[in-house]
Length: 323
Picture 1 (tube, one colour):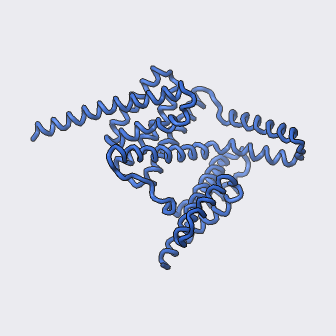
Picture 2 (cartoon, rainbow, N blue to C red):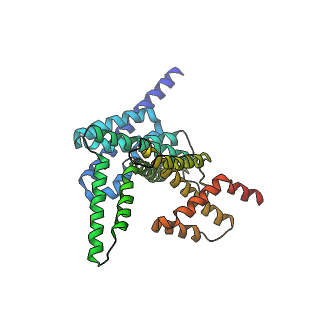
């Protein structure tokens, strides 16, 4: 019995090593394509975390960390130090999603963990470039926005439109406010990458292992009620800290914006739930979503109010209990 156990352990270890080498090689190949084939970036950028996801889903996070470190070292040797931020971002996000799948977590919980992984990776890259490479991201974004503002002015002049100084100043202030939303932007990128990576990984794992991993219907998406209190806390903080020079202005702005966006998603989810509840056409919530993407400022507040009502009054539970 002991010999059999030892043999199994050795076989598992050799399998882990073999698969680790294979997935590290796959990652390096995709990373090389991303660096040297410009058009491939559109696809490969979303495939980079997948080797880490699949390997971690099979063997857990501990051996995956070793593969991650090896891949980072090989990437740095073959493709220069510039590859390290890519590997850091993709590796942390991929391992976070893969470990959740390995532990058989629910889809939305896996998504949340993946978001944390990708966000942490981006935050580390931001800190590294800010303090070690002396890249001031706030200043770089401010310059890019200033160039965009100047281009906008030129465009108005070319089409013969005159815009008064007051309107231009309002537009400038609004563009300037985006500089302070870098943390929110990092989280949004993390959310997007986690969703796309998880979706691709589910498809591959389902094919390889004949599993049935999938996201539940969007109508079932629900946030914890505590998000409302976080949102209201953000509102109060923005009332208190109104100047960019205030110590907690950055915190207030990002808490308010991020919590507000999450509540908007809750409102969209409720629109899908309600149309399903009423047995209306699925085209209605899809159309609303498309309109929201095209005209976000038009539907932002209605969906946010809807999300607050749904969370605050447990609207779904009330509707279901009436059936």
